[in-house]
Length: 421
Image (cartoon, rainbow, N blue to C red; front, top):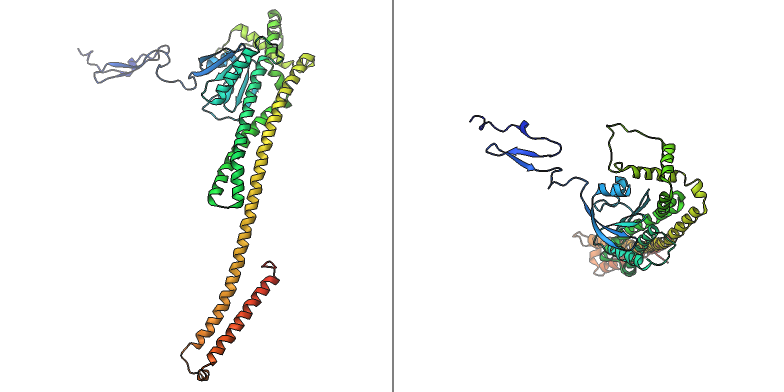
């Protein structure tokens, strides 16, 4: 009876690493299991949530997959920092990265992983993503039986560049159609409403210019580095890997890097937890990468491949550079309009200053006339008041002197070129 009334003790909780059960006691002293089963179902793991992806193969067939970060890292041999570029929760500039077995593409809304056999596209309801999926499937299905000079990864990359460049160019044209009438209206009529609209359009222009500039710089960076372009030729690396004897591959991996034994306490990442055959493939790829500036780069086939990709990138570099020039021209037009507005405002300010000078001179002259009339309006005894017409002559003489003084001010201002002649 005493044992049944003993309160629940914390050290009686089962803390097995395999079950991960968390218990607490209720008001009666009985244990209540809060999370049951491994991994705490119902509690989201940080950084390991599954996301929806669209897989498009070489035949143009697409399907939707639910993949987590670890699965993508193992399948595509990508580090976690590359997958962060595809995370919609983060905002990264446009980037194209060539890796061992994949090409990581982050161009505006198109975020995908391109391999030698398929495209893994981030599933989204954005118009660019939907258009990329439908257009890529259509092109692959139409060219299924036709010979194409470009390998699969280059066709997928070309479509991503094409849609991105066209999307940015369409946004630039739309901005031009909106901002040119506003600038013309502002040049003819300066108002607070027009100034506010131009300020808002200028903010959009600067943001769009940065996006276009980043895409242009990324393409230019790839064109300037032959190693990065050779790294992106995934089909050739795959064919060499399949054609190379496994025995020679094993010997090459031993000769190149040696056998490395890791300590038992060393951490193992999801990318490193791969089978033996994949380790040999990675060793072969490392050998290929280290020697691509040697014998492989010297071969004509590899040179043609780099030239082929360079011509592809150059075409879209010219396109995006033309779009950037439109934005720069638009920015110059805005700057010219601002200069014109500043000139007009300066002219108005000068006119106000001139009017203020005239008004100040007139006020000074009128003050003199008022002072004279005020003095003679005082109640004091003077012989001049014995003549009825004497005060009229005082007013006439004072008015003539004040008028002469006022015209003297005007001549002085004109002499100093304060007023236009």
